[in-house]
Amino acid sequence: MRYLILGSGPAGIAAAKAARKLDKDAEVILATEEHAAPYLRPLLPDLVSGERELPGVADPQGKNLAKSGVKLLGGKRARRVDAAKNRVAFSDGTEETYNFLCVATGGRPILPLALMGAPGSFLFLNSLGDAQRVRERAMRSDTTVVYGPGYLGIEAARAMRKLGNQVIWINPGLPRFGNPISGEVEARVTDQLRARGVKVHEGTEIADVIDVDGKNFEVVTAGGAAIRCHLIVVATERLPNIGFLEGSGVKAGAGVLVDEYLRTNVSNIYAAGDCAEVYDVNRRESRINFGWRSAMKQGELAGENMAGGGKVYIKNTEDYFGLLYGAPLPERAGA
Image (tube, rainbow, N blue to C red; front, top):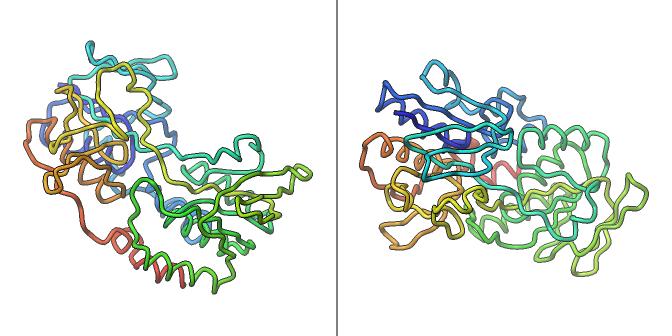
């Protein structure tokens, strides 16, 4: 038996290890476009701020994968899935076959339209490489604009302020996809950031970016404010990264549509994590359950079910921030 898992985030690693645990004689392959060892994406702002070093953002699930019997293939970005032939083609020209496939490719960040014409003005904060580039450039900057909603913007703004930058946070409002914090908590945390010197523009968008001299930029908001800065950090919500499934026959809505067993309409293809739109047996509707803990739980169940299990996914309701950071979000923002 050959299990192929796409993605090395919490969902992908959990799926690979669960399948390997139940099917000890199987071949389990974890293919990821990342070149780095598995890491926890929500901890990247701490790497930017210097509160954590590289080992501090490592995903403990990802340790000793080889000893667990999981083969990790880095630099593998899925390009196309041939469900009829049980085969995945990658952008480097290679292919991998499978008996069971789990799609756990997470999401890709959304770029505001106004930034598309100003590529030198911004950096994403979405990957390990992004975090290293943001920190390096921020160390040479005085003023940074952070663009992003909810906790994504909060964490990026907090990290940049910790570095000593003057920070202007443009918060466009509630994310379209999953928000793990309530409006009351967000308002409290926003007040704490203001108290620490972060300037906040709420409920607005970036309308234009003007390149002043190649090193300085002027950000114009939809409300008419003009903000001079050296760097724009884009910490936006992420859309499910599933474009490579087009033409495969796997059904998708906002994400890959799966039933309560994490199984798609193609019987040997499963999906888990931020790219999966899971049927909620309690709400009787399909939804994407964003977040590290949900992704890990979904991945584990998908791996078990691929290997012959029959467990139903129930939405995770644990304290996301307390489990991830060791402290509630308001405590982090006020620290």
